[in-house]
Length: 132
Image (cartoon, rainbow, N blue to C red; front, side):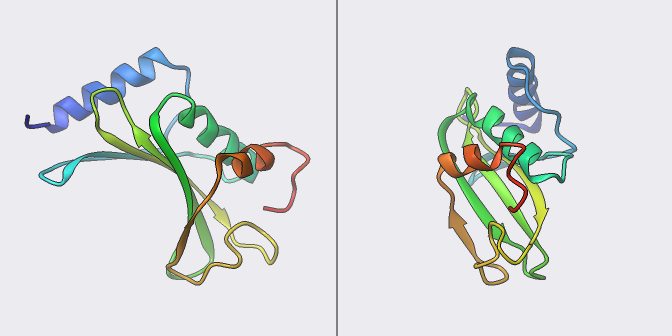
């Protein structure tokens, strides 16, 4: 079955209609032979907001995992949840945080990634958490 860009847009639209989710700042769709993919960036930069937004999305997806990826320049970390939309398309929702000495991703080399247990995102979603 071929998935088109319109199919991906319809799948994302239906998902956003069904669930009250944090807005996405940008969306990228790929309808390739490697499988349909959707990625979306959250518009926030404050770590607890990012963690809360990612958890909201994670609660609506199947086959959910989370990861941290330190960008090659080393100054920011992308925190992501990856899962599947109804219909099977893969989706990655992410937010960017600035790397701090003791924050999440500080131990990653530039360009490296690691899995992140959802429980860690739940801990980071609390407003009291000031070091990310």
